[in-house]
Amino acid sequence: MANPTTDQGRGASGWNDAYQGYGYGRDYGGYDYGDGYYSAHPAVDFTVALSPLIEQLRAYDALRMRLQREGGEWADLRQMAQALNRRIMCRSPYGESYACLSNQSALRAMLLDVGGARLHLQVRLLDTRMPVYYLGRLHRDYWAEYGLIVEDLYLSPGYPLTDDRFAKLMDAGHETFFLRLSPFRQGVSALFADRGIRPNDSRRLDDLLYLLGRHIFQAAWHEDQRLGVMLATHFGLPQFRQAVELLYLCLSGELCELRSAVDEQVLRFFEQVYPQPAIGDFLIMLQRLNGGELNDIPQRAQPLFARLAKTFSRFLNRPAQWAPASRAIPLYKLVFANYSRLPLLAAALGQQGDVKEAAAQLNEDARQIINQILHREPTAGATAAE
Image 1 (cartoon, one colour):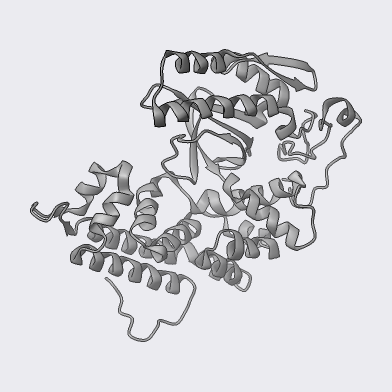
Image 2 (cartoon, rainbow, N blue to C red):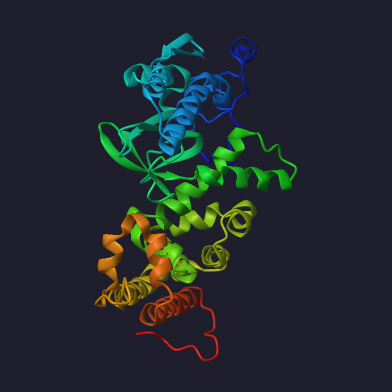
């Protein structure tokens, strides 16, 4: 498969002058089909090409948010209906495309004209029965477990994302998890700017995000981690989250390919953009391992994963009290009953003696597991949590 970090691609043609940023080639993220071939669909500056659609989405969401905060009258609902039904025109390389927010089939046809399969608009209904929108740019890879979202073109306020690392998109008639690497885009741009590379070079940003997703994040992140990651965030368990991501990378990653893909930019990413010392140190360690030691990593990680799962189970089974006069019940019952408001739950329970002690044990065991994977010497006074 062609390496997206080294393939230079072709320059844009004269379409740029006629279509406000359009051009043929892969300057803004063409597709690699595994043999170095990139599609001839025109490259697009989507922020320019889709500006009428994005402006209309912002106008609608401003009306929706005002109605949700302040209430309104029939005139406000009529104004929202007009915003949903107002005709929008976006230019594509093939001419003008028209749609309105209330006509999803026309919207899909417009996005297909403008950017092909690279664009996706997901519509959700809130509890108020009002629609919210997520417009993103995708990168698909035949060899990857997940598709990647490499750029957020528009995200409605209040759009339901339980886990910021993933978005569920309708794909080929099924809802499918996509990795969201788009929140890293600004940080990656700053990373390039530090090295004197043009930060607005979309191709370079896409290439690095693709490399990170293909070799690291599709293994280190998984949808079945969502509960653990959310609890780590709200109960203050940074070592636990690092250990979970590192163990998944050890058990699911193609470590030989990963070692070949690591360069200075990847290491700086895990220092500056997504600080994850465990993965960063692991990537450095890979460079000095021989083939036998590399093959031993999954075997060593398996019992450590089982050990961490047991410690996490003990954490979830610790007794906790929702109110001072209430009966203590296992923490997991309160977690699942309050899944949509974990920040409030953590604030109420995080300082209770049993819960705090169990969280400290979980974090400490995770730290020791990281040390074992990285062949670090144990710190003085550390005890193994069996």
